[in-house]
Amino acid sequence: MVVLIDFEIMCPCQGAFYGGIYIMRTLMLIASVAMTVSGVFCIANGSAAFLTVAFIVGLVYLIMGATEILVGIRADFDISENAVSITKDGIIMLILGFVIISGMITDDTTAQMVFATWLVIEGVLSFTTGRIDLMHITGEERLALGITFLMLITGIYMFFNVKLFNLHVTSLVGIALILLGFRRFVQSFKVEYNRPSFITGNEEKLEEALAEEKRALAKAKEGIREQKNAQRRIQKIREDIEAENDVINSAAIRRREREAQAEEGDA
Image (tube, rainbow, N blue to C red):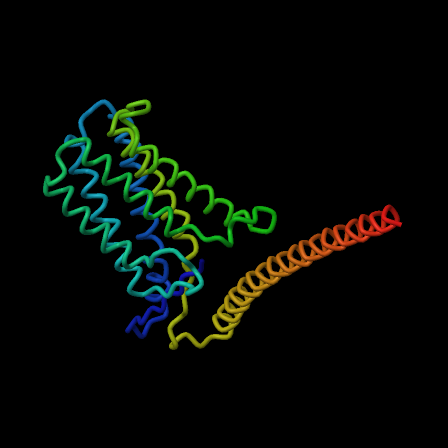
């Protein structure tokens, strides 16, 4: 999934643009690392009640939510993706951060259910059927698929934790934060930028043209994969039809043979 971010930097100097071109990506990286570190902190204090780490978790959620909203305002996700938009993700995370940091989630059971629901919903929404064919996807897509499955498995387990191994809730929350942070860490590297119009140098134009070519090739590869998948489905359907015809023809031949034998017996 490629994110296109168009910066409108009202500055006459080209150096200011180069100083700020990676701001959005850097913010996303820092926020994702903060979320992952908070997850490690929760695991390290797994025996403690969730209330003791609620402030840190809520603060990280506020930071990540604000960052996602900021990036989402400038972002234009590929419409073929089934994942929920980063802006909506950020709004939900920001609201949940306010709820956590204000002390509305005080007991472990509620925290467990909230994070389990969040993992399952985000895992389902980030899952695309196009990634099922493991033999025809890139390593990046395999990584995204692996994270998605881990999110789903962890979220579903958290619903039944009390009935199964009854692990510490704070540790499970830490695992959830690590998965969410790692997913956003990987996602941050997919951000690409459209340069402002005031950059007119030949080298900049060449770099922008190469970037456009790269995006076009990525879309072409996706189209080729979809075409190959469709061809395999067509071939499978044709084989099924041929198999059905063979069964029908065999049944018809056996019926005629039985009829012929019955006629000979009557004669």
